[in-house]
Length: 448
Ligand code: GUN
Ligand code: FE
Image (cartoon, rainbow, N blue to C red):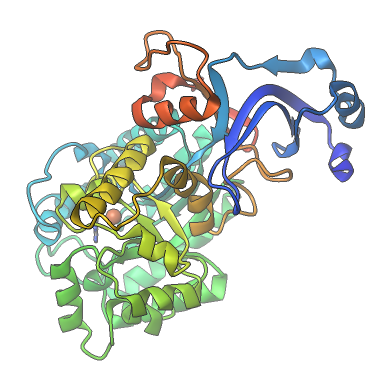
């Protein structure tokens, strides 16, 4: 701990902190002190320690401490491991078709509008504001095929102070909406330009991610190129896998030389320990083993899976295979941009499996809490920086006021922290999120 004392303390909070660790889905620290240094990192988190000693070691004044109220607590920021920023304009509509039809009817026509930078600015500003206010401190975004608009999304996330992975979408195959695709050469060149220009901006919390849309939208040649680009630059990779059975069948037809859907990505060097694949509802145990072997992770997007009638991910089986797992909203296949909704839908999905088979062990709210925070940071290979309140990590946190005036939750007495968390996860909304911090910077309330 003492090596941390070198950096000056910026602020200290005292009260209840809840977070997850590898050992415990829910750890509760009562009447704890958490100090954040001027670099935005957690300098200390101590329960029941003497205040005098701490303030001497870390050199802060006891008058600098902010005391939380009885009905308040801090939790780690929510990590949205899969969200299409470009689809926010039609979120909450157009959920009346299965995936492949839905893409052609709604998604591709809307995404093609992001050639227009003013339209892009409007939608991207809205989605970053909305997700931040709802406690998403880290988001893994799909943009569109347009390089300039994708760079703009990175700029907007940086301006608002959100931690973000941003992907320019790559697709050189589209038989239905023919104007919304790239040539192989353009997709390659523009991906390289996007990566180079985004990295040149040196935004501290925004990274590029190599983004083949999904196997049916890409030729093998493009997948191969993108695998190369990711490998040569040690970049994150994101895509979709095994969301619907129809899609799995199509991939079999398009890539007959591959043994499975996962094998298509594997053969093109797209399954790495920096890969996150959305959905995976219909993956076989062999494919899950391939994820485990390569270190690739899954993003569970239950709202989307229900809304497009795609499938129900068996989370227990994913965890049994020791595959890294995060939660995603998958806007706009998922109609809500809030990760609190994703938490609730994940619990529902798990309960559906229990209804079908009473022997299926339903996920607890504590387990889903971990998947939404620490799990997401692991899925995005960002767990050395974020995901819980370990000393040395960035302070990405939500100050929750369960009894917010005019909010959705009524308290009867001094409920225990565990009950406060459960109520917030099930009933809360942005009115209960008093403050949001990313890397120690207060980003909510949004000041402009
Ligand atoms: N598969 C390929 N593209 C998409 C998309 O935009 N949304 C979802 N849910 N699945 C996809
Ligand atoms: Fe998606």
